Every structure is written in structure tokens, then in C-alpha cells.
Image: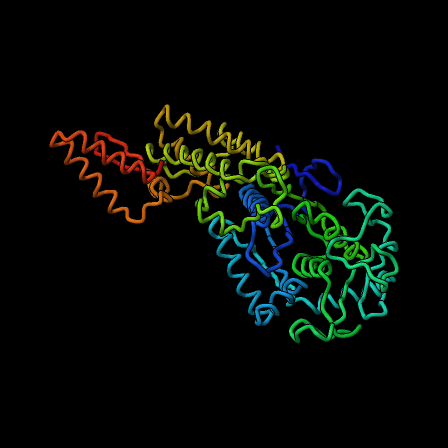
Length: 457
């Protein structure tokens, strides 16, 4: 079975055929770095991390580009509020983003362009759109895109142009010929800091949000590339506007558009006003990064994702079951044979639009086999397949003992030794009291022929 992907442009599952056989070029819209990343950001980036991993596991050479938006109204406002430069703010928040993403096992993209590094390419693209009659200069100094002059506008969102409304980042003002027109170049304002402005043929200012991604993707991947990805919330207006800009300039642009589903918290949209807004760091204070990663992989990337502590606790218990099997049966170091039945079932699931829930079901089937047959080869296959998804690569005992809330593992071992001494002295009440003491700390003891071991409960 060959890989099939759901193309938002055609609204169907399609056989994936890259422009260049064996090579995939993928662009994903990145983060606007004015604050710490939240769970919605992780939802999107986790989806495309898995896609990146599976394309590579499938034998493709992948060029993965994920940009950083480092100039924006919110960035300017936050930098001014804090009394620091835009660069200082964006460096701080980019570093925090990388730390958070690393904590949940996200791979770095091959290229991570910053918008401010590609202003010349943006200016060239805007001038090209002007030459083609698709861009015009407004009275206030902005340069806008004339949406109604582009015949294909609305094809990604699936709406007619008259049904569409201006996007939330697009201010509707008297300088526009049509409310749907969007800004390509924002004229500088006197009160804005000096590092928020660039010289341009149309006057000093800075790029609009949409032109940034068109310029960066084409600069790094070419005028036509394979995959463009992002969250469902970016489908309109951001991605619709990217298509208008790039195709309006005469570039074929992206062939497959992939969008991940929304993130909800206890069934409601995450928002600060509802008090259910969580940064990645908020969650990592209570749950380890691999548990958070595993939790997200259990939902297909295109489906709405429901976040809750209860679901995270369930994910931790499920991941513990996987690690417990590997702790009991040390895995052999093997290469995956994709013709092997379990590996083939895993591949079938992933080849159907990156179906992680089906792939994880295969892992649990393997756990049952490992627990039954005690086969190091089966345990090795379990670990190898899980590694494709970026999980189950820690030493099992390290995971099982980690995150238990106990700061001093030596103290646990001391209490285990004290319990053994109590049992040897036939002080069974004392031994039971120590077990209860450890249990209250989230520590579960396992007595075996080789002594007592412990894991987090």
C-alpha cells in the first residue's frame, strides 16, 4: 500500500506522489514568538513532527522548513511593554520554544527561517504582484492585495469570494478597495520602534503576515513544492492568502495541503477568557514530556483533540504498560522488516494519512505477545516501531522510576533496605508500614527472586 494523504485543497484522500521521486519538500507555518508556546502550538507541531518522521521512515529524503515569525503587531507591542528590543524578545521566546519542543521529543526542522531575514525576497514578491496588477498602494502607505483580481481565491476554504470575510489579523480600513483585500506591506508608524521598520520602494514599513510565508517557502523549497501544513485555523485567511500571493505571482506553489484539527480543553476551545489556557510548560510541571507526546499521538492529527488531566493520566498508565513489558523482557536490537506482519500492520496504519491511533494499537498487540512469549525479538520490534513515533526509547527502568515526585532515589533504596531488614526480623507490621509510606509517595514495590524493585505508580 502506498502513502495516502488528505489534501485540504481537494478535500479527499489522495495517493502521495512527490514532485521528485524519493524527495519531499515540506513547509509548515511556525510560531509567532512573542510569548511562551501553548498547547495549541504543540498540537500543530506534533502533527507535523510525526509526518516528518514517517516520511523519513518510508525512505524519502525530506527537506522540512518551519518558519519563525519574528515581526508582528503582538511582538512589537510586547517588546515595547517590556522595554526591550524586538530581537531580544524574539530570541528569548525562540529559545523557550526550542526547549519546550525538545522536552516532548520534536525533531528540529532542516531549515528554520526567520521572517526578518527574508525581507528582500518579500519585497521582490510584492513588486512582482504590483507588476501583475494584483497589488496596489493605499493612501496611508500600505500595499494591499486585490483579492477579486485573483480568480482562484476561496478554493482552499471552499467558499465563494462573496461569502468570505476579512481575517482576524487583517484590519478593514478606508484604504482598501475591498474589505477582503489584505495587506502585503504595512506603512511605518511614527510611534513604532526603529527595529520594526525596513526601507522599501513603497515607503518605510514592514511585511504583512501572509507575504512572509510565501517568500520563505519559495526561497527555500522552490516555486513548487510538495506539502504545506499548519493548523485548521490557518486554512483561512492565512493559507488562502498565501495561495493568492504565490499563484498570483505565477508560482505553482504547494501541491498537498495538510491541516491538523483543533485542540479543546475538556470539550471547550482553549482560551484565556475561559481560564482553560495552558502553556506547554504548565503541563510539563505535572506530566513528563514523553507522556505528553504519547497522549497526543493517540488522536489522529486531523481530528479535534481533547485535552484534560484525566486523559493525560490514562496516557501515562498506558505508556507505563509499554515500558513495563520492555523492563521485564529486555529488547533485542533489531532493524525493522516491513514485511513482518506486525510491522506491515503498523505501516498500513501510517500509510493511511499518518494514522497514529492504528499504529499504536499495533504496539499494544505486540505488548500482549511480549508478555506471553517473553521474546526479546518481539520486544525489539516493539521498541523499534515505537521509535518511529518518537516514543519508548528511554531505559525502561528510568521511565518507570521517573516523574514519581521523589527527589532522592537513594532514599527510596534506603527505605527498601529498611523494609527488607524488618521482614528479616519478622517485623511484618514495620515492613508493611514502609510499603505504605512509599505508596503514599507514589512508589510501587515489586518483590521478586532477585530482590525488590520499584516503579512509580
